[in-house]
Image (cartoon, helix red, strand yellow):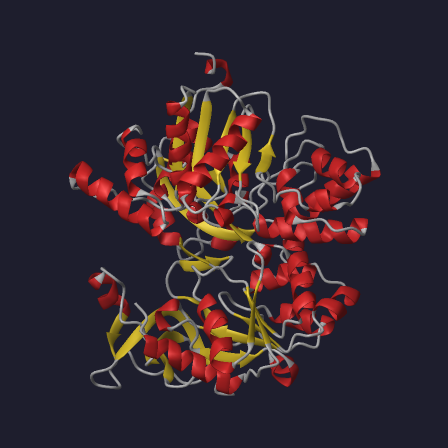
Length: 615
C-alpha cells in the first residue's frame, strides 16, 4: 500500500531534476500493472507535457517502438535494461538517427544496468541515459545516477551505480550489527523517508519483517531491501547483488530458495538446487539472458523421470519460477570448504535431435544460423522450433531484429510467434513483404503450432493477445495443434463490445469458423479463463461437445470457502465491474463444472491422446 504523499514526492522530484515542458512528449508504454506506469501517466500531467500511448504490446516489439518514437517525436521514455538491449539490437546507425532523434531523456530501472549497454547506446544516439533504482515498496524509485557523459566514462564496474537518493529519502548501508559501514565495504541496503509504503495489504507478518524500526531516527521506519551495496568515494551507492536467494530475470522477482525447497519435495530427489545461468554468451550482450536450470540428485541413484518432475513443478510454482531445464547429477559440486560451487554446475546441452531435413535454401540457412546464435546450439533441422528449444519473448524480439537486418525487410515478433520453426519462418520470409505478412500474429487467430491431432484453443488475457501460449510448444505433445484466440486492436471485440457476453459470442463464431464440430479443448489465461468458460457454456447450449476447459494462472490460486452463494456473489461482482449483465451470468455459471479452475498445465498434460479422441 503506497500512499499519495509518496507518489507526489517522487513526481515532484522528477520534474525538478528532469524538467518537462509543454514541448515534451512522454511515451506511455509500460502496462499499468507495473509500477513504472505511475510516473508515465502522471508526470506529464503535472508539467503540461504531452502523453502518447503506444499500441498494446508495442513495448515487446523494438521495430514498433522505433516507428512510435519517430511518428510522435517522443522525447521521454523508459526501458527495462533487458528491453533496452533488445531495442539496441534492432538499431542501425541510420535507423537510430531517425527513430531516436527526438529523444531527450531515457530512463532505465528494474534490473542492474550493464555499463557496456550504456556505452553502446551512447555510440548510437545522443539521448542521455539515466539509471533509476527502487522497489515498489518505496514508490518506484529512490535513487538516480547519470548513465551518460563524464559519469558513464568514470564507471569502471560492470554495471552502473544506483547513485544518490531522491528528495526526502535516505539510503543506509549497514552491517550485521545494524551499524553503518565505511565507503567501499559491502553491507545491507535499507531505505528511509516519506516514500516508504504503509505495508503489504493483509500481510502484517511480512510487513513487520520488511519494514522495521529505524535505529537512527526514533519513531521512524526503514525498509529492508535485501540488496547488498557499498558506498563509492563519489558518494554514490553501487549495487552488488542480493543478500538472499532473490534475483530478477527480465524484471520478474525470483526466489531461488523457494524453488530449491519445492524441488526437494519431488519423488526420489535427495538434493536440489536452482541456478540462473546464461546458456549462450553470444546472445547475452547487453541484456539479461539468464534462464533457470534445476539440478537434481536422486536418492535411489536411479534415473529420474525429468519431464514428469518438471510437470510437478509447474503445478507448484509460478510460471516464471519453473526451471527451463532439469538436469540430474550424481552429486552437487562442492568447494574446498564444503559449500555449493555454483561455478562448477554444468550448463545444459540443448542441442536439438535431428529428425527432419537440413536447411537447404539460402533463406533456411540464414534463419537456422540466427536460431543457432540466439539459442546457443547448432540447428541442422528445418523442423527445429524456436520456443521448444528455449526461446522466449525477448529472444523472439532479438530474432526479429536480426532477421530484419539480414533480409532488409520488416520482420515482427508476431511473425516469429506464428512461424516458429526454421521451415515455416523461411517460407514466410520468401513471400512478399506486404501489410498482411507484417500483421501476422496480430489477427483473431494465432496458429502457434499445426498438427494432425486435436486443437487446443487458447483464449487471450485482457491484453487481447495470446502470445504467452507459445511456451506450450515446449511441453505439450507434438500431436496437439495450438491455436490462440485473440482480440486484434483497434477493432477487436475487447474494444468494440459492451459486455463480455458479446466477446464470447464473437469468439465462438471465430472458433466455429475454424472448427465447426467438436469435441473442443479450451484453455484461458487470466481473463481468458472467463472467456473459455463462456464459450464452453455456449457449446453446451448448442449441443456441441466440449471435452476440456481450463484456467491457466501464473501463480497458485487460493480457493475461498463459503459455499455456492458466496462464490456466485463474488463472480457477479467481478462481472459487474466489467459491465456484464449479472442475470445472464448465473445460468452460464451453473452449467459449468463445480470446480472450474484447474491447476496450471496439470489438466492439459492429462488430456486424452490423439488415439483417444474418438472415444
